[in-house]
Amino acid sequence: MRPDAQEAAFRIGEVARALDLHPNSLRRAEREQRIPEARRERVSRQRFYTPEDLEVLRERFARR
Image 1 (cartoon, rainbow, N blue to C red):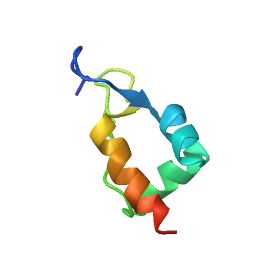
Image 2: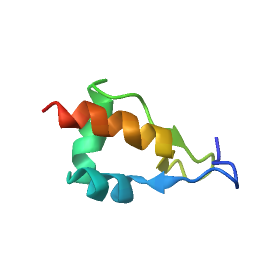
Image 3: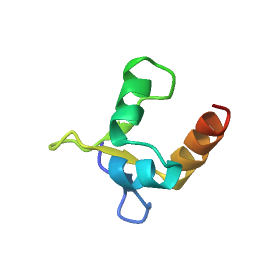
């Protein structure tokens, strides 16, 4: 799945910085199914997050 051109998309590093986490922390949480699986670009398989995803993650990691 590729982000829609009109939809803002953030890469894992940008989201990690916004949450004051290391990108590996997000990867581990996803692998352990503590957070929803990120969308991925079709060819590169890189994770991307929408602004809505970022808000969900903020709520999840604010509780720690």
